Length: 81
Image (spheres, rainbow, N blue to C red):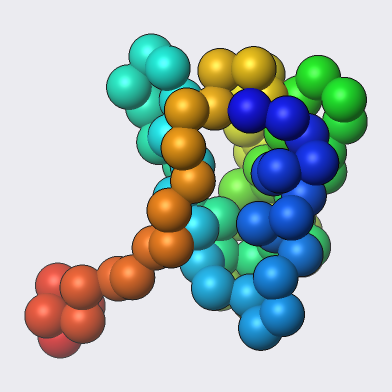
């Protein structure tokens, strides 16, 4: 996938959480686009253990060429109840 396409999805207003799928079968959920950085070759996703925090606990680095699709992510409300 091209970096511009990833940027388009992360820049939607209002933002809807996304699930990013990569070629090896892994997927990554993005709940806060402000915790992402896109370069021409990679997508960096900061992970935090605290809701609404901007402090990164860890980071995932994804080669944008390996992103196969991006979908809106809707959490199952029954799982959190």
